[in-house]
Image 1 (cartoon, helix red, strand yellow):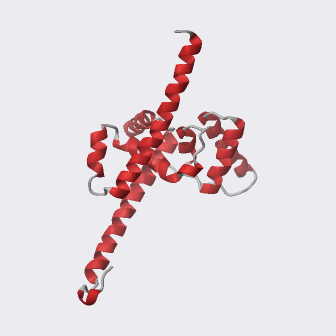
Image 2 (spheres, rainbow, N blue to C red):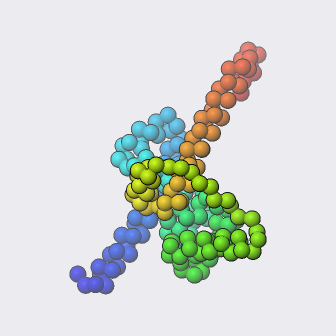
Image 3 (cartoon, helix red, strand yellow):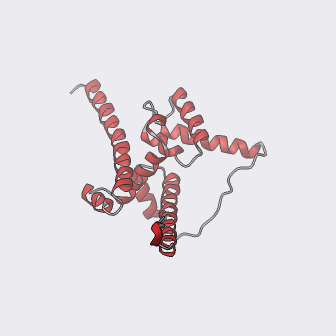
Length: 189
């Protein structure tokens, strides 16, 4: 195999891998929306890490089909998933125009936030959390396995956990409301 053939094969494989992240994320979103009670079984059947699939689904939910940029990788989108839609679009445009790698995009965002701080505009506060070192190593390993930057992985994981807790709280509240509403006379929720 020539170098050019080998290089072209790598590009094709990379494209398939990037597409599969979207496919798996969309698959999980569909499963959660349509098979609430059974989708955990489907996840186990897929044989992939639950957290990896949750991360894929989180990014897929944050970017509707028409907002996904084919010129940019799934990882580009993952870097921006925690931002408001307007900022996502701004950074997607810049990354596309400048042909940035994921790392270049991440650095540009970091530099822009640093500039905002120097301009006197308010930026997000950095919080410190005491975490045992073995957990940090474990989390780094999970982020690396997921193919996501560590900070993005932490944010995505916390967002997913918050989403699950809040969804459960809403379901419980709805059940309580339904139990408290009289069902005679055709009244229902």
